[in-house]
Length: 297
Image 1: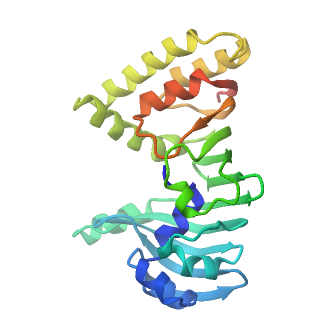
Image 2: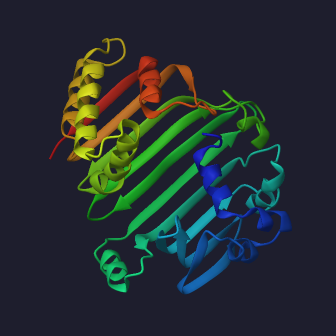
Image 3: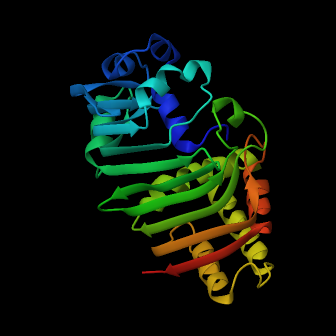
């Protein structure tokens, strides 16, 4: 991971040509190939940020995400975006975003398939923020949150250690970003199956070469259970281990409320490490103290 998540999101929204031009919100967004127009599309300037209504975030040639309103703000955001192409030697001290009314939007040749897929969805809302203290290199990613009134809610937060007074060039070097604390919360009523399982199944299929996604999920479950049972009491207490084992065994349909906290005595360097998923999980578990709660419905 070369950049913190929120900074990567900002970078993805702004094309290099627009950044170099030093333009305001309208020109920045209009010049982007990622954000496209939907019916009623509009852009407005905010203090330290921009707002877009009725847009389409294009994530592939055949798929995208429509949204009703998106806002993103940051400390000196306009000036920072103007210098992104030249890799500025500073990071914003804070930033936040919110996106309302998000729906997965296929862009297939079949108008019927596009319509049915769109109307069968219940819209989602997303939000998040970060705070960075350049004097000590502390980056706090605060409550990246996804909410769907019918399917549930998921949130993620993390604390990271960066070089003091870090800029973009420092983040492109190996071992400059370390994770010290991670928190994940899930209230699942179908959100996990709809958002996480498809990506996880595709990843496991790619790693194993198997054509059967159920086989990959089952193998992951068995491997994870074995690894969790071997964890010492110094890393995870009995109640947390029991809760985490129950959650893993409930895959691919974990129901209810799940909370996971990982605290690293020795910060986990994430920079540009070329780990696969299994190696990263193994490294993380080896150096983390784990706290878990899970209340299945």
